[in-house]
Length: 259
Image (cartoon, rainbow, N blue to C red; front, side, top):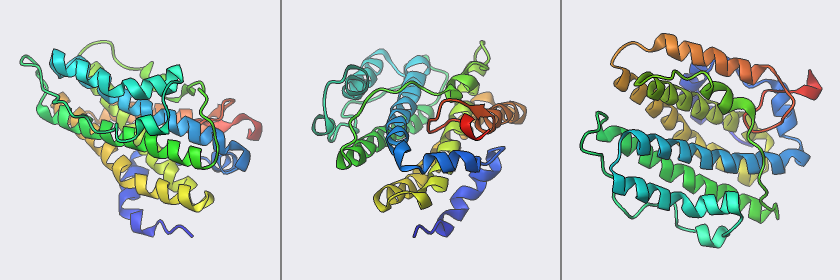
């Protein structure tokens, strides 16, 4: 039996940050054995997309040209696997650490702190990608691409189109995605097989830190109170999570069949 009491201190700020809990109808759908494949494959792709988002962010705003190429090279084996169906569990082993330096460009107004936080996040997301793939492999679940849910796109569509507000909005959205992931891992863990439950519990600490890192960076870059913008995206995120959704995925809303 999974005991989440140890993680109450981690989950408390996340549950306060999110403006709604995951609906029970989503949990009921996600714990069905026939939906395990969808949950795992979508989780796998969510880890890749989370890493890509951080990578594109620092490529655009913070790193020099050489580092930008290094970041693309780092992601290539994962993208080859996910989008071009080349590679395997074996070829991805040990690839989550980057061996080349990631340096700030000389004229970047953003601190090394942005780069350091995002590089650590990327390492962890790519390692989690590999761990999900291991779980899939142990169950004989073959990878196949699945379409992204409306969730991230629904929030990104409301980003400001002028800087630095676009970057601030991206960071706030990143905070919500990481916080929701953390909350869902905790909600799902008691209903999953022991190995998956332990894995999901192990993710709580890093996901909780990722959400805090995104929010801290947003505040630092804004240099002013961003609570109204945080509230705006919080309401949008909650509406995507609590409204009917015909497409079941890791970040989807209330399953249409239950509405």
